[in-house]
Length: 185
Image (cartoon, rainbow, N blue to C red; front, side):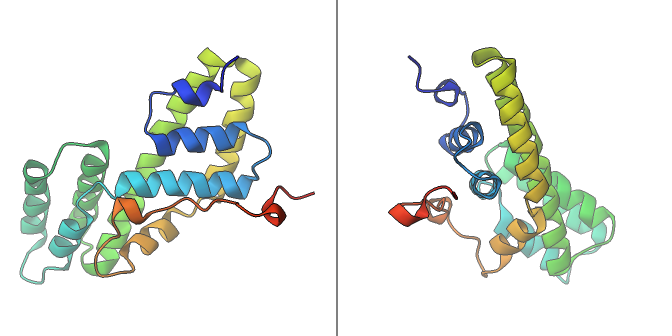
């Protein structure tokens, strides 16, 4: 007997947890949404948010120079999907003329939205292969419902609220540990 298709999912642990919560109907849509938000935060915190913020807030840079500085970040930071997505989104925002905290928030929001799509497709495909069409439909429906509730702008604002983005280790998924915190009746 298997422990569930999420165990063999070739993704990071936080995405496995999101898939497990989506597959388990005991978790509400809000809980699945919080698991997705947690996974997205873990991924986006790999990106150089502080460096993008510094470039976007620089008063001495013209829009063209700001774009060049953002492109130069790729060489100084490890290649990852989160880094590429954030830099691409920041370049788009800077090319549109936005700057400062509003530009940073727009870039991080766009990166969070961008980062949410690929893992969901991967989870859906994996469940189709490993668990069958019915389980895959259930997981996909629950993930789509959670994505509808997901506030990408709120996630971005939460990451940008402090002067420095939090460490990936500090981002925790809320767990229910008490007897009174079970599924609603």
